[in-house]
Image 1 (cartoon, one colour):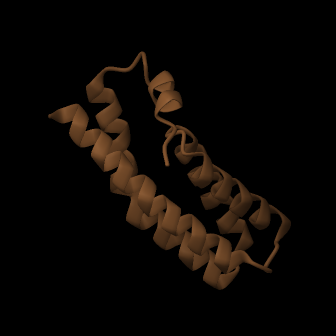
Image 2 (tube, helix red, strand yellow; image 1 turned 90 degrees about the horizontal axis):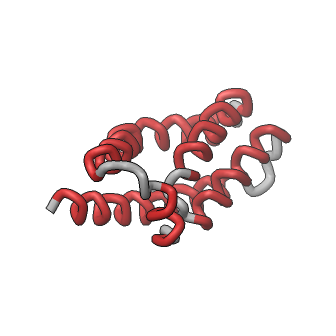
Length: 114
């Protein structure tokens, strides 16, 4: 879940339109981003997984969701260390929590545009 206080602090100087645009970028890139990660995990392509997991970690950090941030950080570390044990399970947890984050961001977006 998003820490709303930290989220509000992070975006306090942004216009609503900019916040909506940032959320829209995440929404637009969501399916492709997770499709690539899933493929990287399945193929155990640690070079691509490191790149994609690191990129995701940076994006998710903007939204102040500590659980999803931690899961993306751990996936980044596993890719860096080429750790196979538990990789699929961690990815599945990340995807599940990211879906919750996505729904929460859609709700925030809807509140901003109404």
